[in-house]
Image (tube, rainbow, N blue to C red; front, side, top):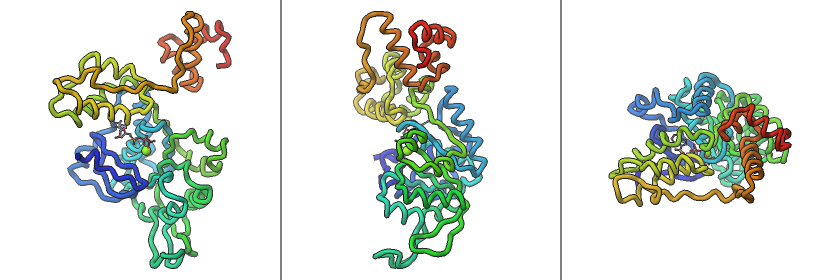
Length: 344
Ligand SMILES: Nc1ncnc2c1ncn2[C@@H]1O[C@H](COP(=O)(O)OP(=O)(O)OP(=O)(O)O)[C@@H](O)[C@H]1O
Ligand SMILES: [Mg+2]
């Protein structure tokens, strides 16, 4: 088992990428990286040259110099934790701990006591006081993963932390002051979560001081082969690359599981591949089941379905839709008008 597989899953998310910092154990990570890693990483951003990815890196670099509460939004597997670690590495707090808590993985009571700590006698079994992860993050950053899964009670308390920069340990009466920037991540759309009642409104606006949207891999197709090359270096012993057909298949695939899926596909391929090059047969690319299949052979219908589908996938953004469809924005407007889809 190599270090990439040594992840533990106690509420924390720990993975290693070709560039990422050493993995810490448990759900909170507070070990200082080694200086060898420091040198290696100092100029490294997570790989990608697409416009969408460069924008992510630009925003992440900019916010790293500040103490602003930052929310990373993106589908599962897009690299939210990768970017959170990058922000930490680029921040003046890089020598301090990176404390990661997965809010979805801990039950309410445990989440509160982990976050806020407790005083002796706060509950049965609390035989001595214990600082919470928020206190332990002092000098570093606090990464709250899947933040929309926090219970309303924990959200209300956490709001106070964000607002006042102070909190009470469970069973405590003396406010503890902290000064830790918070990075939060979610794969839900925060606005949707609020409107569906999953998340209280106030923390939303506190979390959204600065937001970074991490694009799905299908919106940064230019990066697929670059990322693939990195994973192949990581996984391949004898195998030295991809056949042109395999490269094409990777570029065509929709990657509903994003970079994580790409990594898994290549790890599997590296195991099954017997020749010097990974071929399409070695790649078990799952077919996206939730993608509607075209249901007509009439060209007009096909055009309408394709445009409707792409518009849905890009949330109605016409610039992106035109790019995905390989036409200009003006051509898209003309077609939308012709098909009576102006409101799409
Ligand atoms: N730019 C990148 N370069 C290298 N590896 C990456 C990159 N982005 C993501 N990965 C890898 O993809 C996997 C998923 O990344 P990460 O855990 O950061 O995603 P996530 O958005 O936090 O996912 P989830 O919402 O499921 O927690 C990890 O194995 C990570 O190492
Ligand atoms: Mg994550």
